[in-house]
Amino acid sequence: METSIFLAKVIGLVAVIASLAMLLRYRKMIEMEIEVTKIPGLMFFAGFMLVILGALMVVSHNIWVADWRIAITILSWSMLLKGTARMFFPEAVKYMIEKKRTVRWFIVGEIVVFLVGLFLMYQGFIAPKLAESYKPGIPDGIACTMEAKMCPDGSYVGRTGPKCEFTKCPNEI
Image 1 (cartoon, rainbow, N blue to C red):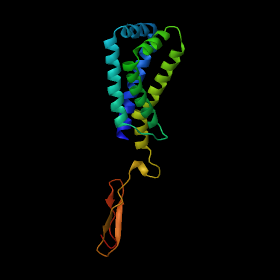
Image 2: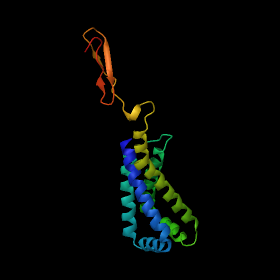
Image 3: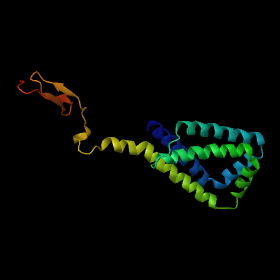
Image 4: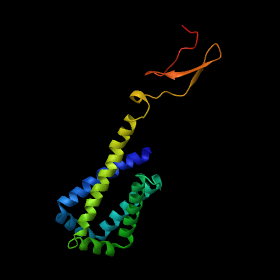
């Protein structure tokens, strides 16, 4: 779970920042992407970097469960595939980037990336803190270990109280 929370924070921040930049400076960003497609070595390098990041994420977080962590797994595989496409099919990538000039549905995609980023930031930064503070049935969030201490009379006592100290044994002053 620690890896999931770490990746949720990182991917969430990157997604929010990148999608905001794209949404606020859409035309300029498209022009920059088109310029990159004119330099084959740069296209290959960008694809190679995406393959490296995607592979690292897939290897460290290939978790297919029915909860929020699947979003990270899907994004990891998407990054790996996107990098592979840039390396093997640069012409198709160039065509898609050129389409961004006229097809406004790509803006909807950026909004989705922004919302996914917010969701992952919530899962990484806020949800763990809420889970820590909410422990049903445990006063003030204190939970003692289930250890037992054997008393001189053969009975056992457990830990209790805010400091989780052993209760006194029977007949103990």
